[in-house]
Amino acid sequence: MSVYRDKNSKFFTYDFWCKGTRYKDITSATTKADALAIEKDVRATALAQFKLGIRRHDSVGVAMRFTEATARYNHEVAQHLAGQGPDIVFRDLERLEDWVEANIGGHTALNAITDDHIAKLVSWRRGQPVTRLRRVKGKKELQQDPKAPLVKPATVNRSTTELLKKIFIRGRDTWKVPFQDWPKWKTHMLKADSEIINDLQDGQGDALMEATRDDYAPAIEFEHVTGWRQGAVIALEWDQVNWGRKTIRFPTKPGKKERTIEINAELHAILWPLVGHHPTRAFTYVAQRTRKVTRKGASERIVKGQRYPLTASGFKTAWRRSKSKAGIKKFRNHDLRHAFGTALYDETGDIYAVQDAMGHADVKPRCATCIGVKPRSTPPLRRSPRIGYARFMWKSPRRSPRQRQRKSKSCSGARLVDTMPSALGD
Image (cartoon, rainbow, N blue to C red):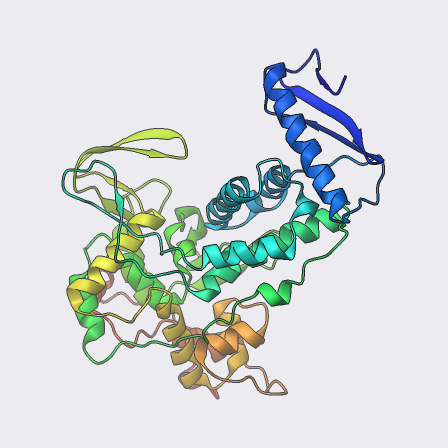
């Protein structure tokens, strides 16, 4: 019998031989008729592969479906990423599964995906618009903006080709999935635009901060002063802030060296007024209306006037509205990090100090690319971090009036201990 159900499971399993190869897997069917239909599709796929000359090296191996491979990759790799990584990769994996099910078949084996399929997938992905939701009068749900631009080549590479390649490599090396014809990944990588270094013009910094809501302004100021990524800023918790030692612990991945930055007067002016807003999270927003939201399967009632931790989607919306109100077009939130690195390099002339401050694992290519310079062939005499870049880290070239006012109210003449020398060469 090629289809049966184990006494400890409610799902049926197919088990058959085709051209000297054994195929066995648990289906999602709870009735024998549905299981037979699935078994028929798998058998037809196996015969088609045999006619095309695709052979499996393991005559008694178990076929791994693409959906099983994506589920295992999410369970073993993606969910353990830092920051917003798990949600982003999960969304990309769902997109890959939907395309494979619609264009190849839901029961397609991982090693049955060829260069032809990957080329069609990349072509489809680069024709999709950027996900940009907006409210439409008369509609309860958010609607896709019809004027949203198409995704960029770099996004296609990152969310589709590179992710699919990682799944294939893990399948080959860890799951021991045999591949008769390994895809030529270089032919599927699109030529991406070079890194764009944007900067605010005179007066735009103050205009941007004036257009930003008061509850979102501290997070943006913190980004500008420290050069932290948006995800790390949003997720900052009070447990990471040590007021006694005047340090902030930067969240790092397991196995990597922990980094800390010093709380000086400017950071103190940003963070101290936020104490008491939330028991665990540093940056919060004030709800503008009462509504019911669903996050990760759990429903939550948002009450107008109360504070809640910042979310990635809410922060992006607030940033986009602030830019529009200030009349700024070509400036991304991530450009605040680039501006920090560029200004630090102009101050110190040491790209390795920039690397330490920004937390890059390597000078090239990321650190050099984000500030638009080429690293030196040999590192210069390394300055102490406290002398080389920490002195500059707290210098914001464009401090808003709101930030200056907050500093004057919070510090009120009391100055934090500053052990920085007066000159870099001291």
